[in-house]
Length: 506
Image 1 (cartoon, rainbow, N blue to C red):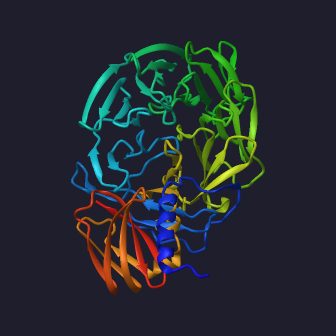
Image 2 (image 1 turned 45 degrees about the vertical axis):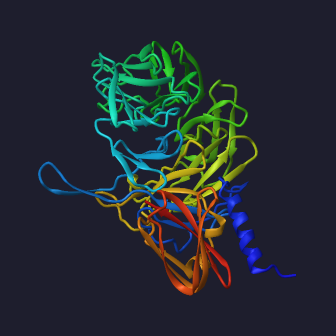
Image 3 (image 1 turned 90 degrees about the vertical axis):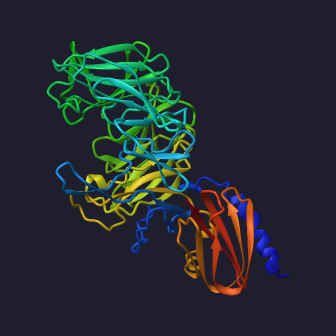
């Protein structure tokens, strides 16, 4: 017996209310799915495209746009603002806001600017307070910025150093906003590891590594790639610079060799163990079994393997093995602090499938395909460098969507990617329906290949807002001025089917 069209419409609505709760792509064995020969057109700011080439369709939304300005000399300049690195957290703690570098903060629903940041470089979201941004300044000032009041205060000053860095560049705060590990450059070339307590706003311990900064510049030491606190705050991890020190040519301190990746206690910065002899692109996170780990590509040349090294030194496990996509031309993010047990891996090159995948940190071999990045990656700025949201349900990556060569500046935008709403991904149906403008403020126009019977508007959690009856025409106009800012879904009922389209009201 055939289902009636009315019942189909009801079924569609019920299904919609269920799928809006879905968060993650399907788990499965890794597939090397090459970037499609024909890629989607570069979406406009706030607009989305669908990557249908994967086991689960992925919605990709552009969240930055070109910025034109005039410099101090009166000359016009062009900048492509983007989120930066794979270990930078883009979203605040409740994922309602996102920041682009230390430049501006935006609403994560409608992509409108919330406020500009000033004198906050570098800027790091609090992991516990969605209203708070921390800044660890080179001059030793530690600042707190509150979004709700747009106020900044200097809460501490660390003196005695030519320069102070978090990382530099690849460090993070622990998941409880308790500790951070900074590096300080001394005038004589020594490097101090500085443990700072964010609760008491005091330095709790320092450890001097004689000559470790050496003749490196103000921004980067010669012998250390990065220093970071672990997510628990229990460990300090040092990745020694593999370009200047290795097993055969280590940095030495009092006769002790330093190389690879070393782990220290946070409480007293005492050496615990060397978890791997060669440090590569990687991030600190949690395995499924609750162990803290460094997730990184294997060895000097990648070797087609992804490893997790337990920080307590008890084991090093291959998470994914012998797949050529997992080379060194990629990045790892474990910024998904509310979803432990996963790492988010970028394959930067199209020859390595050009995908972004979440990898389960156990021996299951399971992954989630989070889409292709569609970047030409012809410059470092265009490297996708995907970073995970705190809940792990979204990623942010960089791409030029093959539209821009390696120029100065390189063409590049930031994008969000997440599991697509199954009711809005059919490319054939989307070609039958056009909704514009989107985002909208006052009204939207709807053009459909078939005559429209009615249109129902749903909010982001599947609740019906209102239904508009349409007199069997294929063009109509809807006033949305009374809707609050946010994401909504239109169910457009025709004589043939129900088509769903996501809209943004700003």
